[in-house]
Length: 264
Length: 264
DNA sequence: CGATAAACTGAACAGTGTTCAGAAAGCAAG
DNA sequence: CTTGCTTTCTGAACACTGTTCAGTTTATCG
Image 1 (tube, rainbow over the protein chains, first blue to last red):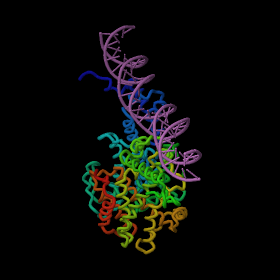
Image 2: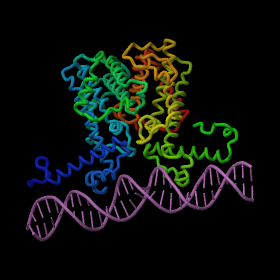
Image 3: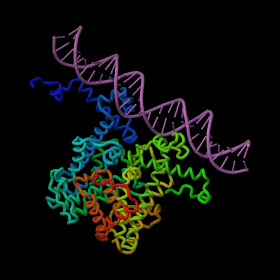
Image 4: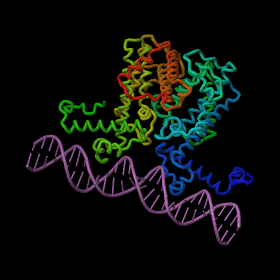
């Protein structure tokens, strides 16, 4: 194989066609995300996108081979977006104790979800009837990434002793999960990790779907209370009470514009 | 079932037309629920229903004035179905301690959700883009009912001392919620109630949406562990370990046929 | 019976995702 | 430049969808 094909040096010097292709792919996803935010996953319309970008509907099939394929791209992007927010939030307390970083990561998780309600539904709520994520895709990798961020923190906390070792409970086989994430959790550690994820994810989920009426409840306070309970249970005490606020202002500076959904 | 024409003399002497109307309304909802279970909320098709019941699509508008109206009926029915399951589960331990009844209710909540995944999505995950529940409808009443069941239990537990009074935490104004439910919770009680709901609802939500891979995790064990943590936190200790199983066998006897979604 | 209201039909409208033959444009080699 | 090949794009078509509306059938009641 001596011939240097177009695709080999594509990354270095993308041809005009490839550049246009990338730009249009991005533009299609942009329009789709607007429709997603406005009308939900079911409101994403192939023909609507075509109209918006000024092409015939059939031409879109050059860029995505079906609506499902577009969904896959959007889901992957959303997972990556989420984990970017979480990472940025953790980094605010990069040199702080594990407890603060955990709280910050969770706060970022919530902030992203409230500002990307429809994307949250897209990735966490199986909103598309027939859709199934392709095996071994970027989708699952992006999914694991955001979980791994939290796992890394609790593992560090248990290692340094900043988090108390979970008390023994019913056995849950950790081997499958350890293999997937490349870790060595005990049964109790895995159980507590998943239970904790359930807890704060559940709180976020209820809030995103408007099940905690903001007329009765101050969701900010309730959420910090939930997280406080969680960190108390993990033995890292109550974190710096300003963590949530510092994370929020950082996120609003870095990704401005999109309104939160709470108290709306 | 819905109490549609329980009104006035209709129940006493339903005319033939009214009887037919009720039967067809039920039949339409039945077909819609089948479509819901098979293809999700987005897969419910007006014309498909019409085909199934052997009528022209236009004729359905005699029974429901739009798809949204049908959704409302389905949502109401689903909330009622859920609270029926929860109630039946609690009743298994009618004379038992509050802790057992709480555990049983939560187990029923989960079993219903796993067996009615699409209905769970319908009522808890805002799957229908433009849909908004009508004000003061049966929908919100049915929604409150299932929450009130759990609230009644914890209130009883605090009254009898079976549940330990929650430790003080950040203030959350309980007045709105108290008004809605006709109760007199303190800030701390309300906070703990909502946080607890978040926790087990979150666990159920993750399971229903396949985010806890049943290849790695024994979901039954994980869920009981979550509930155990919860009841430990509420001070009612670990409940009878057989509660989940007894509830499940009761539910399977009473509502047989529909498979659970776990380990699928 | 006849009058009236409810139930139902069939056609139509504007929309949807997807397919396909064929035209237009970009690009490399002769 | 021209030739040949590939990618990109169009326009029409197909089988759907929810909803509306003028008419027709059917049931109920005076």
